Image (cartoon, rainbow, N blue to C red; front, side, top):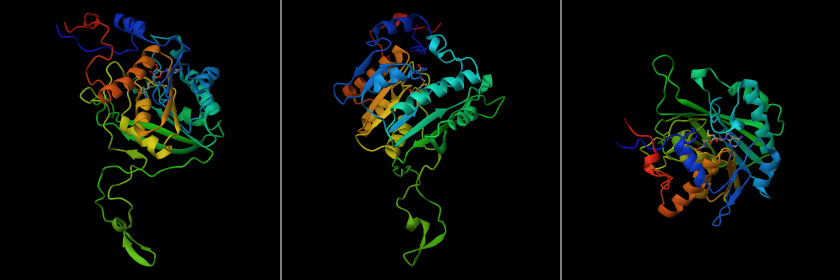
Length: 322
Ligand SMILES: C[S@@+](CC[C@H](N)C(=O)[O-])C[C@H]1O[C@@H](n2cnc3c(N)ncnc32)[C@H](O)[C@@H]1O
């Protein structure tokens, strides 16, 4: 019988337990990358003291956080993730937003991926936005929508194809304009530039369009892509994170992500010449994050596609097709 591939790593079971036994970090421990100085911790993002220790003397100029938004996420593996309702969830968010503010540079960006568990009617986005108004230093800068190519729930509801990305700024951080690969094809209006009448294709700084705040050109990750990380259930596309990094930080800046999971932000920072400070409350995901970086350095590959990132856990411990 063929193994089905590795199961979700947040789910309890024999595979998860064996992976846990292979993790080099225990709760509270931090790994420092000997090559580029990245740091990965098994840290609770809501624990301000632990976040301080994780960051040491670094002051990130960019934070890209992707917290779980599904009330059931992680409930099975650690109690700290057991968020039961909307107000409890928002209180929990308030704590990691606050610990992020504590360590951020004077001029910094905070990006937050948010979502909804439509099937359970859990939609924390508006409450999160209202809560953020209490943080006077984080000023709302943008509300981005990333379009997923594939959705779910098509038969009984509108297909869910969007992911929200909120952007806040503290102080006055710089911004670099980004372009997509989508060619400009529409001719636009004329405008006088330096006394000369110019059509918008002539005026533009690039032949491709800017992403704006609706991103339609990013493929969501699935098992056929090289960057796929088996066992990670909530992986963000590298292209999206690299776009955020190159628009909202400068080379050699420090980028932080306190919900690392598959380590996308760490790898995107490595690929973009930034240092990354990241953590996950679950040692399994901190280990996966470190392994993904090491795997990239060894093979040049951004993920494992369908291979098992934990080959020391024998195949006999994988679920099998019946
Ligand atoms: C939605 S996933 C992040 C996905 C990530 N952006 C990626 O591309 O792989 C959320 C992660 O947050 C972690 N997490 C949940 N509560 C946490 C907490 N209090 N502190 C740190 N990490 C936490 C979970 O273990 C999970 O791996």
